[in-house]
Length: 464
Image (cartoon, rainbow, N blue to C red; front, top):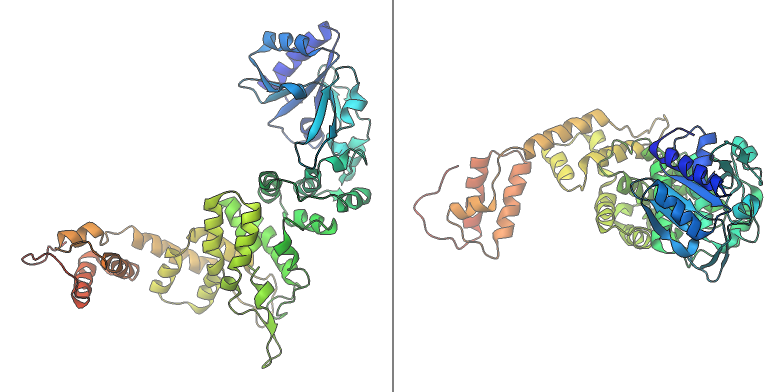
């Protein structure tokens, strides 16, 4: 394991533990990551053979210890990404992720201590001083084979979050989930999980996976899209117009868009919200898809707006951040417009209005790329990122120019009143149309007179 300040502290703890008759092991993800040639930011060690008071005294010789979970036998050293745990036994006493009875037992040995771990690849242990690998559940073999396999039939279902962790690890590492683990997960009830826990696994899958679709495909295989992702389940088997979507049903299309979105998330201004947009954009097809009596083709008219209640339902269940939910609600109704604009080549004023209404105009363009079908046919709907980027440049340039503000209207003699917001909206439309500031002010004041706006009497108009 790469030598860092954290691993040096771990070795110091291991040295002191040996002097007192104990032994320290690297455990969990840092061991797994080492054998995957990945760097771990967080390091966990487990100290065997020492009583809690002895371990506490030992830690005081290394740094400034903190109790992370005293009843669980978990400590940390301040200013280091190092968790220090004692071996423990645990069993479920309720349905929640935290509903466990835990008993610390420094002398149960490595095999029994690792028995509570979720997957074999996470149950490996490595002696901090000697580097000896302790692998009672054949995790290294599964790691090399790219397989996620649960450790124990009885302890695994006690923590329902492990179902989502299986899907998340499968997505991040592009591993297969062992058939027996899939089967076991089918019978686990996820309804008692908290939103925060579910969203934590979802975020890792969306933001750390090359193909986040694996997360959802694994949940589908486990029959666990419900209750948390019920709206997505409705997309399975929902047919689309094959001219525009030869890839398959709405589920297949959505999974492809999410993966193409993941390839662009580093460019996005709000990566997490952007990928939720990719996930939610076509939920409206659930209620709007129908076969036309005129041409026999499948249409989903207004799905981008009609789907907002479904979008809101899903987001309220899985997303805790108000700003993220607002972003997705704003962007879903706009999601088709960039590609339509790239095809139709409308006026600058039109694209200015489009970008002005978007929470993130740049992300809307990246979404347009992700949403384009990857096929070549006679009716292929061509996108044009270069065109959209040029129009975005023009929009930003327009918005950087001087414009008519509320103070300008007041200085010109208008008194704020019930129609003031309408005047400002009118001035903003002129701004988006590229009208120069002084001309826009004259036009806005003329509009105010047309409205019969009650303004303070002044001689003349202050030109800008």
